[in-house]
Length: 508
Image 1 (tube, helix red, strand yellow):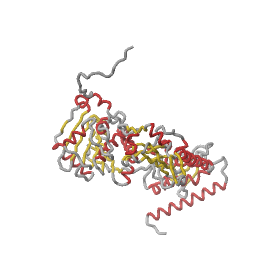
Image 2: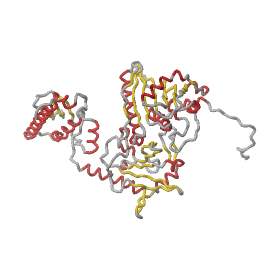
Image 3: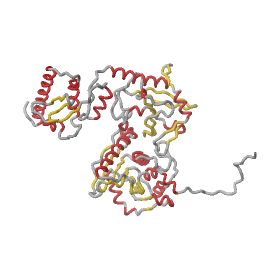
Image 4: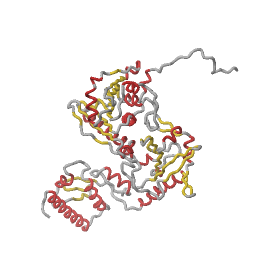
């Protein structure tokens, strides 16, 4: 049987232009958080220190988005190149961009029109616009008359105290179309997700004040912007204590003549804040590797097939900081939402060691230590006195910590906290049959400052829960219990009245 030859003489060379239809697939894996982060990466590469993320609304309907930065801006040719699909340039080691499609993919993931207005140090305004349909047809880019956007660009840069910089504007967005209440919910939920995402991935830049990011909402009908909300850093290693002596510990992975440091942390067992529960989810989901490039977090957890996720490894987090050393050992997708390690790198990590005065510990030892800390913590927790399960009225953050730290009396129903009308000499009453802690409604304003809601006065409610939850245990409630609760109620009622007199400037 004759074989087919794949090598042969070249007759001619054809340049096969890419089909503009490929634009349809741009940004299909972007969330709104990852898309906005991609645009902020561009701002950071342009030496920006301030970024404003603005949602444009019309009668409550989100219709557009703008990213404003105080970077160095672009001249005309640079603006053209920025709008070119798949442009390649000489990337610096610390640059966040690498693929040449970030601006376009991020924008077309949620909008059909992308406009870029920019002002460099020369003071000249340049503006370019891409429409998805035009790009799909012929890669066409509109050059906009700078006179028509100069004032708007100036106003946006002035908003962040800048004289140079760039505005990226999304129009014809594919944001949800629903009732006013639904849109308000979507916008607030989106802003919350952005605060969690941007606060995490840029936490080092935000903490060191090399970058400031604000969110605001602009009402087009009223031509007015809301108060800017700053993004606060969420440091996944922001704990001060350590769970075990000798940690964090640096292990070294060796690949040929190359050495990569792995900073291995074992988190304290009592962490329950946003630094542990990243994105508001169970902190155990974020065990594994945290990979940084130029202090920008690229991966938050995941073991990349070096080992497997396990409930007992919830406290194990490993920092990889030297991106230059691992750049050719990993593969990063364009959305920066997934990282793949080569088999060579996986093997090197599995065999990484820590050498201290001739004594070596391995990556396996590290995992064993992390597991043992959590196992021992659970044993201690099981020895704690069980409590009643908290229910409505107590702040969700408090309920979550109670459930995480204390075993609950599973044979009983949950305990609720409510405001109710009662005599002024009483601060609280217990309704054991309904399993409710009733607080005196007439003291609500004094304790909440007027900020009323289902989970208001969290400190007072938590203290009342801790003080009284044991009195919901069992079926018998004797005279001593009733008398003790009446005494507590009278004392607390006197205390809140005394506090009110102090606030009104009364005498001692």
